[in-house]
Image (cartoon, rainbow, N blue to C red; front, side):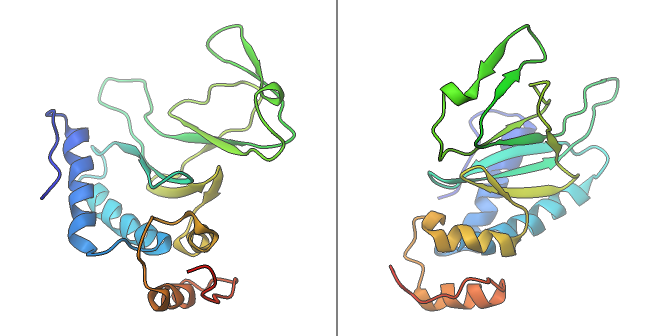
Length: 192
């Protein structure tokens, strides 16, 4: 079984091509750092096909706690719109955010708990009084409960905290991935 787009946009075609490449590569679900590493290589190959014409931004959710975000920004001929991605991480102490496109403020301290952290990802920074981070061209980031993890090595912390893919991943394979990605946390096999 392969994944097929319902519509005929280039965005759908490329996204389903990515899903099919992941399915073809892995017979079982990989650890987060292995998936992070594979996606980086795959997405670089896609962008290199036509670096100037390619515009590719997407979010790929991988369960309740994590999602990947990727940006290969650009602008179409004749357009003044730059299609890149930006993010901001909100965490305690939460404050008010003023929106750029209307006279409106939101007090996130009233909408959140002390233990919350969330990343907001957009093509254009929205609130005026926050520091948004623009993705580098070709950057793939794994967000784990709002925390940006920019490398496969950093993604191991997500896997070891139990936020990896729901998997029957073998403890020995996870131990090898831990060594390979030089995790500072020692793998004991507890809880598996």
